[in-house]
Length: 169
Ligand SMILES: [Zn+2]
Image (cartoon, rainbow, N blue to C red):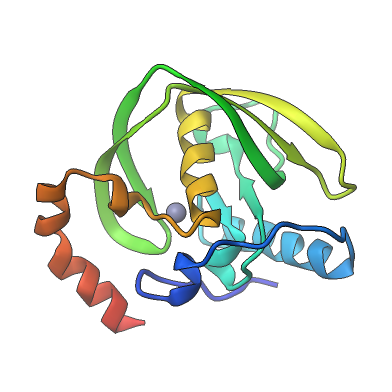
């Protein structure tokens, strides 16, 4: 089921998501909805709180960064970032903060681990866009949004737009 997006100003986006402990029907359902929703909204990444579930799950659509070999939406449950390397400073956007794009400093490489729907852990080495998306989605599970990480002067400049988004939804 495609679920309604939650937007900037919605309290759920500021909550710390709960870890998944039972890989049960409910979790499979939320994951299925995340997959249908990321396709529908044409996102690069989507975290469970963005569709109203405060649990540690996000999905990534690898086709957006030229991964021709892997066209399947990737599922990451209970992600843990293990190490960071280098920096990148690129434009970022977010389905929950429409029409705002700002440069955000992120690590160039990130090593992380996450579980799949069977609870099995896997380790990942992410670089460039993949690394950026992982860090962005991981932040969502911590109640952090990309606009929290931009230069204070930029944040000030977009504060009116942010207020409008919060009021519109
Ligand atoms: Zn986002």
